[in-house]
Image (cartoon, rainbow, N blue to C red; front, side):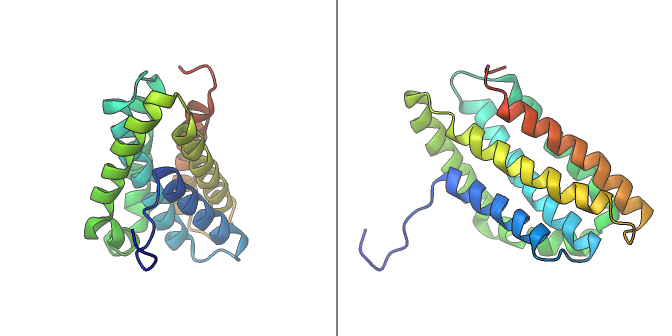
Length: 174
């Protein structure tokens, strides 16, 4: 690698960037509830991708990985009707343009490397991402200016994010 080439990010760094973006969205004065929900949906899609790779490749396997994919999928299903296809497409534009494949490759490489060292780095990064998701969604659920449907969807998705956080943050490996 030359000095002009960008350094390849590790999966944990990508997850941390996503969590930081969610946190910045919350602390930066928010935005329209539909946009916040679309941003949360993007993070759930990323969590689903990573959970799928972990479920398929991680050694030892954890129940959290299979459940993580299901929780993220369920959250997307709840959020989709209140976001609408235009915002969904806008917030996942990068995922359509090769980012999803790059994330899958990063996850496969990192899972393989970290499986040999036994480090819980990916679990920790997923817990951080899901914690940031829960905070963002709690804000939308409590926003009285949001539509009732948006608040309801945010509350349901927040519960999914909290369960995801609990599963990835569970130290005993179940």
